[in-house]
Image (cartoon, rainbow, N blue to C red; front, top):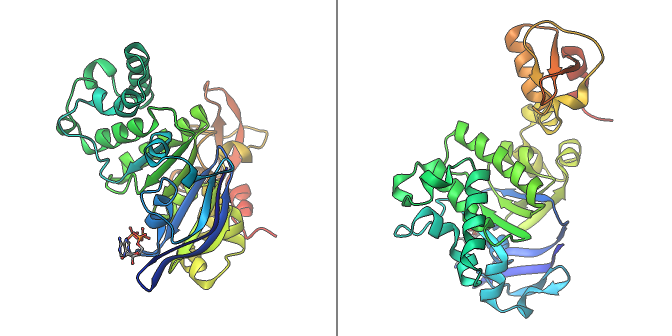
Length: 312
Ligand SMILES: Nc1ncnc2c1ncn2[C@@H]1O[C@H](COP(=O)(O)OP(=O)(O)OP(=O)(O)O)[C@@H](O)[C@H]1O
């Protein structure tokens, strides 16, 4: 559990983060969104004390983060940033091994961890382990950056625009990887982005920042149905609301009994993706397939239209 208690950060006379109080539940993904300069980066950098608050307390599992030496805090908390920040003169394996080496893990444990993470991120350890960052594509470097942040098995991972530099296709893949990894390790993640699509895709809870304040901290559903301020409403994008609602739910959650014609859609895709496929293929319903390929039922355009309507 990460608890922000009345956190304020001033530079001179300007409060760039103002009296933020919120609690982040363990094993969840919290996404911090807001306009440029609203204080998102400053807020998360106070968790691992790259920035010191002017006032207020941040507790990690009940412990004031100032009671832990800074170097120890930063080893405990994973941190991944845009542009990944890999060491250019270290191999991929050495980059990932940075914190475990500092922690004095033995070599076989480090090697096993590097292999596990590279495999998890679909990078062949035999091929990529000995490469240098400049020999990798941007998307591969970014995955190594996240792998490095996860190497010491942190309970908490801070991510600042980690996918900002990626093209949309690689970005979607990176987001999928992140969801898989979060499930695998149960890591608590706080992620900063200004991409609302990304926020709705990843978040259990979203914190919206405006001029240093958290103006709403809620689940994606709550935020869609009851935006706290006109700013939140504008940020969500009024014309996007029904699609964002569908994007939160999996296709599998809308399955009805019965058959349908044509190629199936996977049950773990979002209902928004199902709607897109229905519209594009001009069908009234789609078969829905489980991960083993078996057909579990059908998903109809009618039911998605009902599900996209404002919840009451
Ligand atoms: N070291 C500093 N000294 C003075 N002002 C700072 C410092 N760091 C940040 N700021 C100011 O604090 C405000 C918030 O910055 P921050 O980087 O947290 O915003 P952000 O929401 O992450 O923005 P972006 O989306 O553009 O990255 C900005 O106005 C910035 O200029």
